[in-house]
Image (cartoon, rainbow, N blue to C red; front, side, top):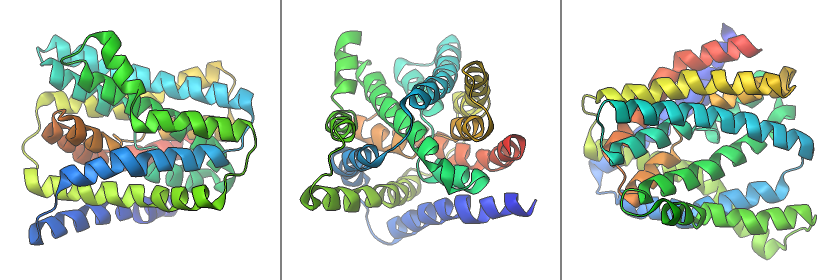
Amino acid sequence: MADLLRILADVLAPVFLLVAAGALLSSRRPVDTTTLAALAYWVLGPAFVFDLIVGAEIDRDLVVRLAVAGLAGMAAAGGIAALTTRSIGASRSVTAAATMTAAYGNVGNTGLAVSAFAFGDEVLPIATVLMLVVNVTGIALGVTLASSRDRSPLLAVAAGLRAPMTLAVIPAVLVNVADIDPPLLVSRPAGLLSAALIPVMLLSLGAQLHRTGLRRPAPDVGVSIAAKLIAAPLAAWMVARWLGLDDEALGVVVIQSAMPAAVFTSVVAVQEDLEPERVTATLVLGTIVSVPSLLFVVAAVT
C-alpha cells in the first residue's frame, strides 16, 4: 500500500499540480491556448520525438513485439469507442474525438514514471519504445480523424502522415540506425525543446480547462474512458502473452496501455478544432478515474 500511495504522490500528483497552475494562471491573466497548442504541435512535439528516437537502444525483435502489443491495445480501445459512439448516433466529429481519446494514452510523463517506479529504471528502454509507438501513432491517428470530417479517407491519412511529430520520426530513425551522434548544434536544442513539451502541455490544459469549465460530461465521454482504462490494457495483455512477452516487458506493456488519454490529445483538439471541450472533459475526468485503476493495474502486474 505504501508503494501505491507513493505512485499517487510522486507521479500523479505533480501532473494535477501543473494543470492547476495553468488554471490559476488563466484566472489571473489571459492565456492564448491556441498559440500554446501550436507551439507544442509544430515545435516541441517534433523535437521530443527526435530526441527520444535518436537515443533509444533496444533489441529490434523485442521492439516489434512491443509495438504489436501496444498497437493492439490502441486498436481495441479506439475500435470500441468508434463503434459505440456511432451506434448511439454521435456525429462524425464526436466519434473522431472519442476514438482519439480512447486510443491515444498518456504514455509519456505519467507512463514512463509509473513503469520505472513499478519495475526500476532498467525498464525505461522498453517503456520508451512503447511511448514512441503510441505517440507517433496517436498523433497521426488524431490528425487523420480530424481531417476525415471534410476530406476523403486517402487525403485524411496523408494529412496524418504529414503531421510534424510523424515527419520527425524519419530523420530520427535514420540517425539511430546509422549510429550517428548528432552534433551539439542539433542535439542540445532538441533536448531543451523536448524537455519543455510536457510542462507546456499540462499548463495549457489547465488554462483550457479554466476557460471552458468542466461541464456535465456527455455519455460518450464515459465510453472513451472505459475503453481506454479497461479494454486497452486487457487487449495489450492478451496479445503480449501470445507474443511471448513476460515479466517486466509484459508488465510495462499493460501499464502503458492502461494510461488515461494523452495530454497531447488536447493539443490536437485545439489545433484541429476537434471537439476541444469534449476532449478536455475526457482528459481530465479520465485522469481522475485512472488513479484507482492504475493502482490496481500496478498491483496486478508487479
